[in-house]
Amino acid sequence: MRKSEIIIFGIIILSFAVGIYYYPQMPEKMASHWNAQGQVDGYMSKFWGLFLMPIISLGMLLLFILIPRIDPLRSNIRQFRKYYDGFVVLIMVFLFYLYLLTIFWNSGYTFNMITFLSPAFAILFYYAGILIENARRNWFIGIRTPWTLSSDKVWDKTHKIGGKLFKIAGILALLAIFFERYAILIIIVPVILVSIYTVVYSYFEYQKEM
Image (cartoon, rainbow, N blue to C red; front, side, top):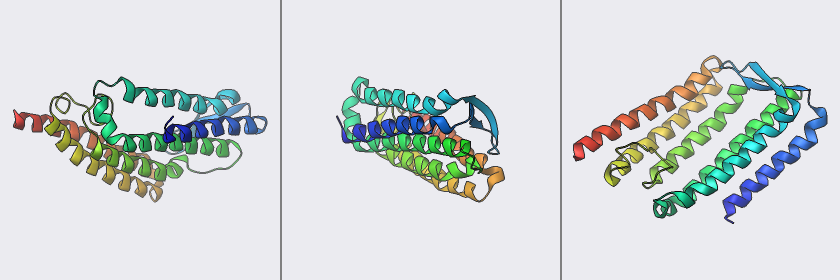
């Protein structure tokens, strides 16, 4: 078992332990969803409010373990596996952080959920940029378009610029801390624009190569 998988299993076990510990203290209906302004607009039962996230994390772990084993280009994944493993750990830490925020909210603490998530999104996006910069052509990880998957050269050029842009999106996400009213837009819009740009960029780079 890889070191990253041991860390993630530890996080998941800790999540279940936290859920069991807080179960008697939680209300029968737990706040589980927040709108763009950070206000509660959805609830679920206590059981699912405490254990849905650990169950989802466990399912995601199994998927992340499976991907490097079933990809036809898994030899390429091995070339950047340490970055992939780091990203998977980071996603699990992000989910655990979100899980703790949910528990704190339902324990009676009041705060803007989007604002508190902003630094976590910033770190996640920035590291996604690092992963993208180092990714080699494969079927599951990275900016996968018909044009990047058809050419190593297009893949490398697209991921080089895409990685830098995702890092910028991560830095911009920090601004959401200071602009609560527009926080969700500051977090989401740059990522959407980067995604669209890299798809279009890969198309034109492929046409130039042809």
